[in-house]
Image (cartoon, rainbow over all chains, first blue to last red; front, top):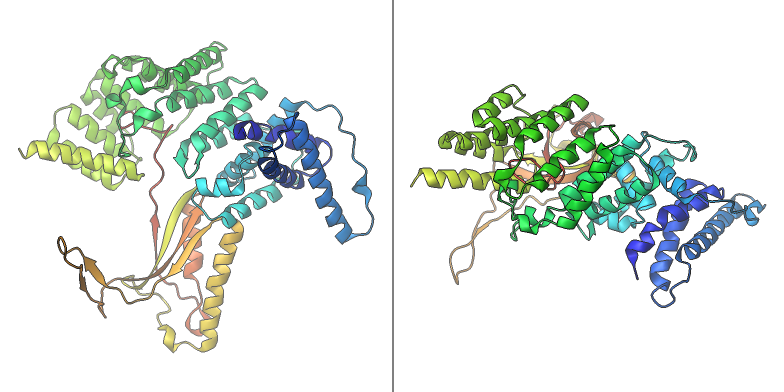
Length: 381
Length: 140
């Protein structure tokens, strides 16, 4: 059975239930039940109309749940009558669901969890495993999120930017557990791009595709990080790169530049270089200037300083870094790198060791420790 | 979305404000303390921030490899080690500020006289997952 197809039907089915008058929280539970039922039943008896099947089963589940609830509360049974289905613009429903699940009243972690379940069609257990928390914790997080948005009108347009931030968070989580969150983020962003015409949605999709294309080359078989300059570029996914570049070009042509398009442009310039030495660093610095004008994110200025170090030499890069707050994540690692490029190996070794101590991830810590060890070995022989 | 360890020390942390050993509390004060801890964990489960909570027995033994074909060497248990971990709680929260807030709440568990212990808890971040889109030019 094609689980990806099944999950891609989730938002449309949920949208139909909500349009028919079901509350979001109850509809979402009913759709989850229908998905579980589909996984059980479809392998032996595949339906002719997958979506129709899901709508029927989910609606029946919703009615059953509402009836038993209602029966408990009062004897009267008014939900017996099904509201007319009415016209169902699927793309709009899907978009509304994205807005709802990324509603600004939700914390980032709740928005992520709710998006993965209600839009992505993942089970609570899968989401819990992906984020390495107990299933009960994730179930609570999702039901609280559903309560938080229970009063939100379903037909009001939301802010695309909040949706993009949620998808970006999912993408950055990468891969852990049995769900590939980066791939899931790409799928959800593709689905969003099909529902709304927005250059920043295209920009984020391009950014994800361009980064995802390098994934196989980014880690060695032992799990250690491979820096961009040392990656085997034959292992980059050229189909994903072409797709990302085409999407980005179409977005840029509309002349409504945003943060994600600018980030994707940097990624595209890396993807475009046949070797690390042929990277167009001058253009990359220009894109970082654009990005810095769009956002006051200090990480952008840090990356810009490193790009300056490549374009104009390590001394220029170190001067740019000196102007930044040295408590920024990865600041020390960048200074270490540029000192090595400048030929000051003892200082670079010392700084790599210091950067390792402050690394935000285990993979980076190990990578930076190896850099320090490599230089120290060279210096001592 | 970051995980933190709240580490509780038997010994090794600075002295708490309400520094009366548990065996000098009244039984009711002990019950109130245990109840507070359970309620705290329950609130975290409800808020979707709970990951794990464990308590450790104090008897620790040091163990090390002693060469091919030889049994491991053991040392201890030591009655008076400088640092002794009593247990931990793991939380999954949206921000460092939230982690601080929760640690402060846990440290307010009641002790002698029903007053908060003001116990020092050690807050340690877990390493994050590997950076993907936030990858840096110089490593990744």
